[in-house]
Length: 274
Length: 274
Image (cartoon, rainbow over all chains, first blue to last red; front, side):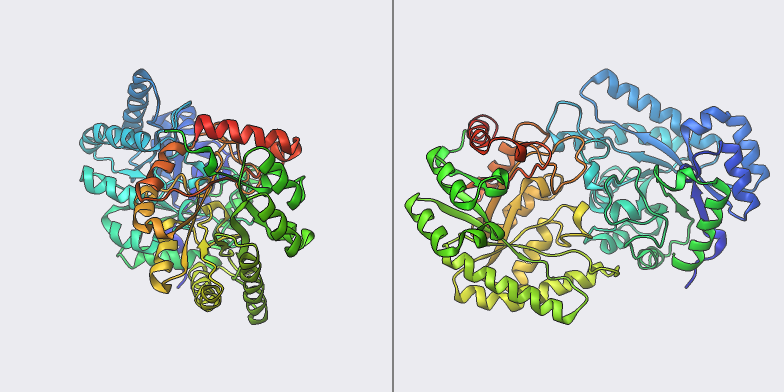
């Protein structure tokens, strides 16, 4: 069944040429009422202005991107990453984001200790979590594609992320991005195990064949091989009925187009292939 | 502890410029007595000649590459893939290979049914297995990096491959390639669960940062981020003590060098970083 058009959200990096206020107004004008906000764009705009325009446009912030990148070899850098994530929690609170997405961070430069990096991530989230709970900002761990395990995110499966949730408790959940997770043989099981309360964000795009760079070579829904309706169905089987946030990071294609046209394509594809 | 130099093998695509007989003789001359053989190279050489030179050089064929690529949309193509894999079994038998490596195949062109593709792979292996048992050729399923799930291999974790072994029984095992599997949070557990008898092949190389193409941008051991001694240790903890086969597929670098020099580098790195 076609999803309710009111559940369409767009990650603003899909329309990177727009400022934050341009994106909020540009989405709202075209009937889109959810936005994934990027912190550099938010900083550029200013929190007070952003909050006002969001309210004026009746726009839900489906997620703030991002905190995390905890894996460093340096104790000082670790504290800095934690401080930065605390600021991200404050910002998420200020714009009433449904969650703050955490990208774990990869292998510290010059090291090979993947297990150690994963333990660092656990420790960092444990330390951040009380602060996020006080601010009433849910933290959403985003499993990252294994291709990016070294550079960007050493949490690579839903199972890993849910294990962290189980260990660390309330206030923590998942950001499920189909582009990162579609290949996972345990994706359906992971979604079911996470359960509705921990499914904090759902990002959609498509996997192009071939894909040379999961970070910046994403396809628009329908242009690749991901069975998005099936995965959405697995999400909904848990009771989840949140926003589907289009996250098409495409340096070579979509980012070059007119953002208003891109929003129209998102709307069209949302109706037809999501 | 440094592995016994006699356990060093080299996948011949690491020294692609050499013919099969050149590779066998070139390895043996430098004290390497295991080789991973590629079928197109074997065909070019002829089985009788290959078998004779292998014997003369006291060379173990650690694996024959490859059978598989079972996932097609066409029933005729499926039968053709099976026939091809049966021929591969015959060839593996003829050169006394320790196993035949199976690469599953990705998503059939124009489809999105990953689960269906995985079921096809299971059915195909089930059909191939009796033939391989009769020839006394163990089949080694190679989990493929998730980046290549669509194009090349929809078996992407050790757990998936072991589940297939559990379902289909005797004569089936795993080819563990560190480049495909190093990111897997369940790698150690998977190796332990597989157990010595099902660990049929072990391929080493390194993961470069960044890696744009897992198929042709592999690093020499020591040049990347994989903790190879740790993974080898997990293998050995099961009782396994087979060949470590260097599989550095590097179109832009190692394949361009003098093959003899590449073998010397393999030997050196095997002593120092494996």
